[in-house]
Length: 273
Ligand SMILES: [Zn+2]
Image (tube, rainbow, N blue to C red; front, side):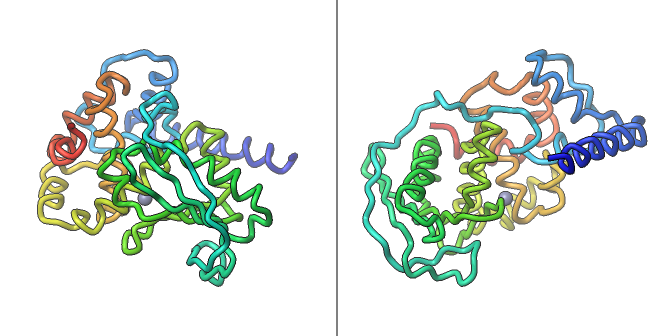
């Protein structure tokens, strides 16, 4: 507890040092975050600056892109029993006694939720499977339909997509952290974006051209991993702007339309009904 507080103070100090060192570079991220929290749409101060808008799209922005009240296609979940399933995150990947659930959605689509046997009891596995179902129900249908299953394990905070197997895996700790930050919908969206888009478009000529023409990334994470993270990082902004215009601050909407119009245009078509 004490160590944690010291670490927190230390990171705050580092942030102050960092902010001071780069004060001539327009600390737009902090400014915009402040605007978001205060619900105050001041003018975009980032015009002409070539730095990304945020560090990450999901954590640290304070933005509730997908709300708990948004439409949800989840219908019911059934427990099927314990079976051998591949569940990454803990070695060995093959778990001979995974708790296997099946979530059903309003149009009949089914998605497996496989909880590693290290959850210990069916009750605990059920509790975590239940935490995911309505988040899956909030995915755009074309993305949700690409998912075969979600693998869940008990352990260190982690989430990652496996586009080849059409699934993502996530730990109990990450689920709880994201729920605490009201961002589990966004994490489920992010990982599913990998599953749908990565192999189809991540390194496609269309996307590459859009990246090159825009010449700037929405987050540092996207900039550092342009082939894999740029679509997921960008898609959450475009999805929100297309489905819920005005939900993001005017600052952010303007930034996206002014700075990454080609990627916006590419992704917009997927999210329009
Ligand atoms: Zn990612």
